[in-house]
Length: 216
Image 1 (spheres, rainbow, N blue to C red):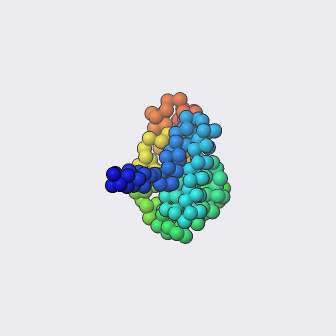
Image 2: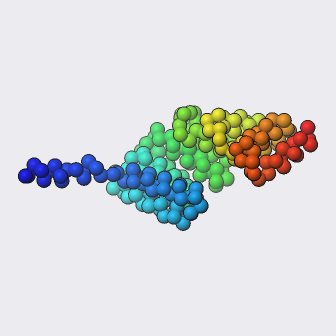
Image 3: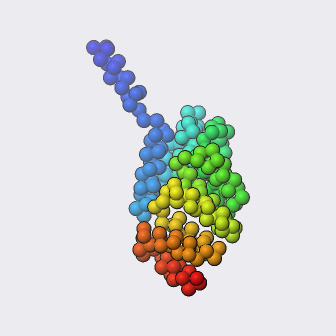
């Protein structure tokens, strides 16, 4: 009988979900709600993910996931300076957690610090070429180069992003914008046509094609 009781008591310890696993589930739920346009509910999930991660950190039980999910959740709430603070703290403990470099690159981008953003994005792709956020990192690099009017570099970065994730309509559109700004009108048309392939009603795409055709 005592053996049975001991076995039963031991089950929750093995079945218990860690704080970071629970936080990840909340983060994913938040992304799903955000995609559905339910930002109030999304922020509730992000807030719970943040709470769980900071609780793990306060208990000195944090993993690299704790800091990464915390930074991701803060990013979705547009708390970019907090993203940087927590990511820097995480990198002091987990120097090879390259996901934190990528999310810091995004945060600096939205703070209009393109030099720092590019630095962190390049560090991420140089060390994690096949990482889950490599495509996103190249897209942000493309945006930085486009905003700096370095259109050929923007073209290369956007193309690299699209090789890794070819179905993102916005990225094809930005590629078209960079090519059009560089007077590469035929190539721009090809990019805009890809936009319409994925979304026939994408705002501005057909007008951009017509504009480029007039300039040929």
